[in-house]
Amino acid sequence: MLLLNSSLGLVIQPAGRADNKAMAKIHELFKILVDQGGSDLHLTAGSPPFLRLHGEMIPLGDKKLTSE
Image 1: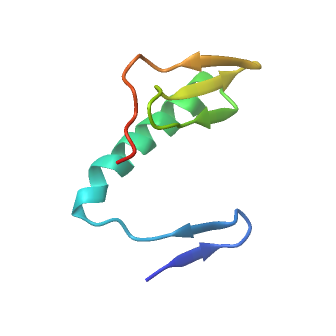
Image 2: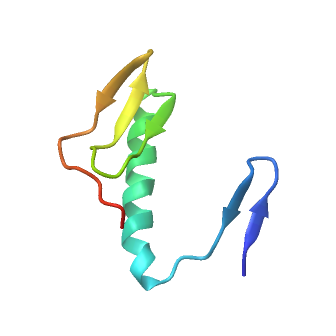
């Protein structure tokens, strides 16, 4: 089953068991973004996650993301 949120242009699939860990991590990153007052979350395989805070790109740690 796919859910489409047309106002955001997102297609959402229910997560399987393997995806739950990844979704928990993304939820944690969005929480940090909101708590810090950031405007954007940048996720790129091979780099740590970055948030944009007052126009500045701030790395969230030094652990690089994988494509998984």
